[in-house]
View 1: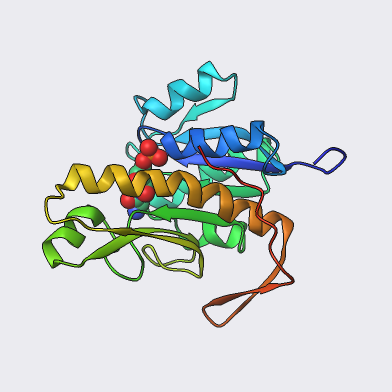
View 2: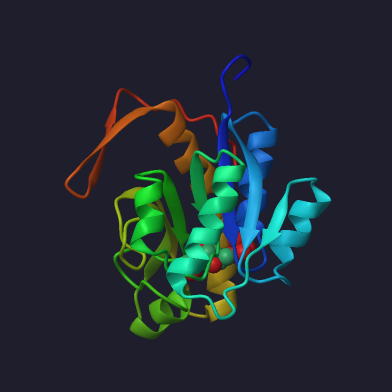
Amino acid sequence: MVGEALARVAVLLSGRGSNFLSLHAAMERGEIPARVVVVVSNKSKAAGLAKAVELGIPAITIPRQRSTSQQHDQRVLEVLRQHSVEWVCLAGYMRLLSPSFVAAFPRRILNIHPSLLPSFPGLEAQRQALQHGVRVSGCTVHLVDEGLDSGPVVVQKAVAIEDDDTESSLAARILDQEHRAYPEALHRLLTQEWAVEGRRIQWRGGYVGRVSGP
Ligand code: GAR
């Protein structure tokens, strides 16, 4: 990737931050032509923020407090502009973005969700899958639109559900796949030509995968 400009990525998170770390690690290995220039959270105690600080990445809390959703998103947008962000990766960011936020980064916002969308959007996707009795679940990386866990699918990885799975055992196996899916999705979007047609992403040319995963 030497000589290529690195895309400036913001990661928005509300918790643990393992997807942030898997993206960052793939970038550090030179597998994705991008770098995380800022991490933003709505939760000051999010473990992912502390990890960003350890890595020397600007880590900023913007609590919702008494602001409206719109006001909160404007404050986040301001921070992203200050860091000249080009792409936004939601990684366990438990807030729905306002339409003006989505419009500020057209087709440049990604989200990861722990189910095979459009099945089981929203909270506790792994529990929803177990309760429904499906035999296969997984994870989805998708472009963000104004809906909840909707938007064109970029990458999906399937995970078989075992008879003795609990919510936590299933979540752990899905998380392993998330850590592969997110770097792969960002890599594809940054290195391949693509267009959105209807709900589908149409990829032009072949894909030479370079992301090894964790
Ligand atoms: C991940 O499992 C991610 O898919 C999920 O939150 C977790 C965050 O983990 N996101 C959603 O459910 C969004 N609808 P992490 O903080 O370790 O990356």
